[in-house]
Each structure stands twice: as C-alpha cells, then as structure tokens.
Image (cartoon, rainbow, N blue to C red; front, side, top):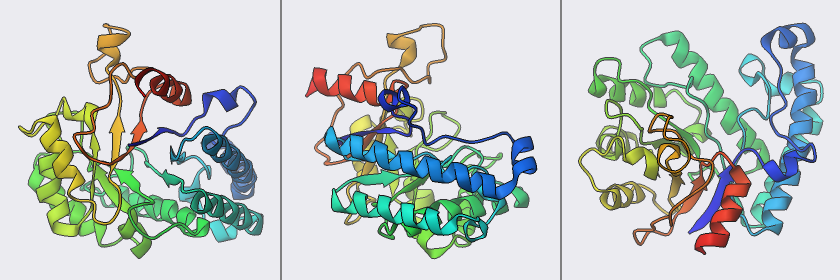
Length: 299
C-alpha cells in the first residue's frame, strides 16, 4: 500500500508554505479575479514545494487543495492576467508528478452535489468539477482515474433511487476529462450511500469507480463486512490502483465528547489491506505528522 495525506503539510506550514491562500467574498468583489490569480500563483509555487518534500520523504500520494484557485467558480482561467505564468507553473507541477511516480487527487467540497434537485446547485457543481479537471488538464495529468476527482453523491432528497438516477443524468453533462476522472465515495450516515448503493446505483450505470472509506463504512455498511466492501469497491477500478481513505475515531481514541463520526488527529491501528494493493489517503487532522507517526509505529 502507498500512503499519503491531504492538502496541508503542517511541517512546511511552520515555514509559511501554504496552498490555501484565499479571501472572503467581499475582498474578491473588491479586488477581482486578477488578485485571485496572484494568490493562485503563490499557492501553486508552494504546491511544488510540498510535492518536493513529499518525494524526499518517500510519500507518493497527495490530495491537492481545492483552494488552489480562490473563487474559481466565478471566472475562466484564461481571463486571469497572469494566465501564462499559471500555465507554466501547472506544467512544472505536472511534469514533477509524472517524472517521480507521484499520484495526486482532488476532493471537492460538500457543495458539489450532482444529485441535487436544484438546477442552480447542479449548474454550479458542474462548473466547479470541470474547473478541477481543467487544472489537471493544464498539469498534463492522465485523463483517467489515476488523477481522481473524488466526490460524494450528497443527500437522498427523500428517495435514494431517484437521487442516484439524477446523479447519473447530470454526470453526462460534465466535460469529457471530468467524466474520465470522477470517482465516488461511500458515506458515514446510514441514510446515505454505502458501497453496495454506489456499486449498483452508479458504477453499474456510468462506470465511476468507488473510493472506499474505511471509517465511513462503520456507519453505513449496507450489510457488508469491511473486507467485502473494500473488495467490492476495489473491483470497480480497472487498470488503475484503487484509491482508499482511512482515519481513526476521535471519540474512541482522543475525545469521547465528540460525535462518533469525527476523525482523530492520528491513526491508532494498523490499516488493513484485505489483500488489496491500494493507494490510501490518510484523513487525520495531524496531516503529514500523522502519516509520519503511523509509518514509524506500524511499518
């Protein structure tokens, strides 16, 4: 298994390295998209620094921040004043990823909901997902699930079957490169979508692979064991190593007062492979520190 972490490198953040420079909407309205482009360039420069650090420390898996381009749902990349500089930096990042055998992904936020019955939400979701894929295109990354854009289905809106059908219908509206990269993840609430729901409702219909989240499965099992669910999800990845997520329970290991779905700062148990060769993003609050601690204790 290859292990990685998500978005923030706490070690480098102490040195001012960040890919999350953003601004509130009022600032965006005052300073405009060109200022967003300036922040984006700084984020991309630091993204390269993080990838170099990862490679130096033997870390091949990394989830990129969706905040690389602040307010990117509000403009076209080509309209940014420093577009040429951004393209140059994105190519530099993509070349580094490919030349060093790294794997990067995106996990757009909870507001991207293809299953929404609200046309406005769907329109914004499609634009945002396509923007994520355009970033990967400019990096020169493969147009396949090795450069995954991972999302959840979202709510059930009173009828899970209808919501899954809506998801599949709106999937067809995405740009080709986005469709080629999109993957879906199982949820952490019983009323939402487990691996079996996603397999029959999405994978069998439109071929989106399933990212297996070990922790989420504990709360939405679809009457499958963790091993069976992991293997079913892994079977949906064709010619590409499956992507998984792993986290420990904060309620059990760190703070019993929090809700049981909360992620812990660190990983407290050995990650089971179930015989699957997977790339795993550790979703621990301590980010790279949690990964380093895990590798020391369990490898």
